[in-house]
Image (cartoon, rainbow, N blue to C red; front, side, top):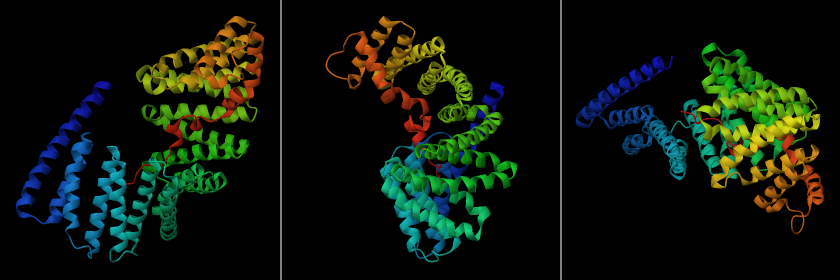
Length: 444
């Protein structure tokens, strides 16, 4: 199977290189005897080929040249204005992919200005392009955590897409849902959880309807987007204390991701592990502990498998799930299992903490282990773990120097609610920045 995939990839690469040479020949011809539009189009296609060949840096120069050529065309012509805006947007995407966000923002703002000044700007085509530019600009602002800027432009994108969706719902509802999803994310980051929840509910409803009505060739994309909305919405509901609703949504999300992972395990195993972890957290919050344990165990198994091939990416998530599971087992009297999991998490965090990025998580894990060991009458080991935790994170110290064992135990108990209990129920999307930054992909 792997040999077949390798052969397929090699064949595709050869085909791309042939296509690249053909495009270069056409470009040379157009430069000699062709219009600026023909040259710009060939340059854009050349940039696209470089992207497909994995050379993002090399893709920048031809698209930059295409933009310069299109700027020279008359801005009064709606067709050339649309072409310039399209080139600017494609340039912005390549700049973003190469971590040039400031330049991507400038390019997108120029595209928006071009569309606002163009004749025929009230046509459906122009409005659709403008909404896409606004959507992407909001995304770029979000990448820089400029939430107010993101909110402002995304609200305009939503307004335009509502109007477009009213006229052609089958075409524009998925785009409206994408902008609503991002808008909810920005509202949440600005401390407006109720507004974020309302907006995300609308996004989820649109995406459910799309999945139910879609043909098989687009169902995968629809399910992926639906899972994003359900993932965010369950977190927003939990933040508002609506835990039973959050649990139901997380279960729906899990069913959706199961279907995706069944069809494409390579692409969706990571997402499935995350969905299982978060669903377990919500179930535990509403007292369904045994179901939560089962799902967390499944998440751990998937993450063990993923970590074998990519430890740097997946070991932090594995350690987090191990820590969470031991907090589910301990209250049920399964102390030995809880201690074993805690020790494994500590071992992982020690390896991951060589650069000092996991100190707080390691300290928390050690305190967690101290609680478990003390309950098993392994006092000296509990003291050792607690002392190390306080050395790593002095904020864990209550007052003065580390006291004797009895006081350490009391300190652990006092800190239980402040440190350990919140971690029992917090969904993973609030634990890792990569999950907090769940925004829809850029539009082409």
